[in-house]
Length: 216
Picture 1: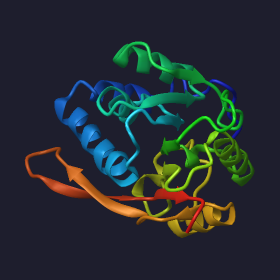
Picture 2: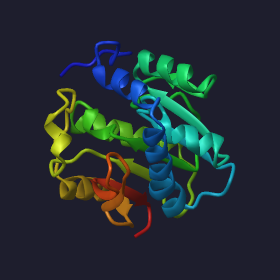
Picture 3: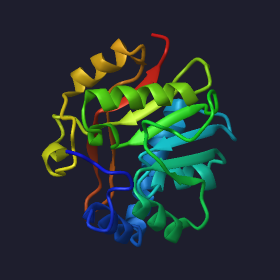
């Protein structure tokens, strides 16, 4: 799979589908709850923290982290189309089109680097290693959780639903890979979030959530 710069354009249906989903109050509420349960509560960043989201897509969690919780959020994605849709939804945002292997920020800039469903889209392990090195470069050298990555893993039914998934690893393999790079998982790699769609309230299990720290 050979991705070119500024790929994932209008032919990538995922963006258009979820752009339309945002019109539904239940979908917006679902992302608000996800943001609280997956980022705000477990990571406990102080207000005004600087966050870099890589592979931001349309930037739903990033919107809430910025507008509701008062963090300084910067977004990067390889897709010009994703940035266009993000600005249609949320107006002017700190969004740049760039490769995750060459982030346009200075060293020691951010309190947290995060991503939703980015890592599995990288072409291979070599590209993933370069991306992780860049994320590490722009991070401040503080303790605690400094990276959060939600990764589609082989245990997830969605792993084969998107042909742009380049790395198909198990949850355990991702965890070992992060640890070999000096990043330790300090929270559970799976959890439940509310499923508010349909007539009955329920819970959905989310797999492949990596809360990473340099310390065990």
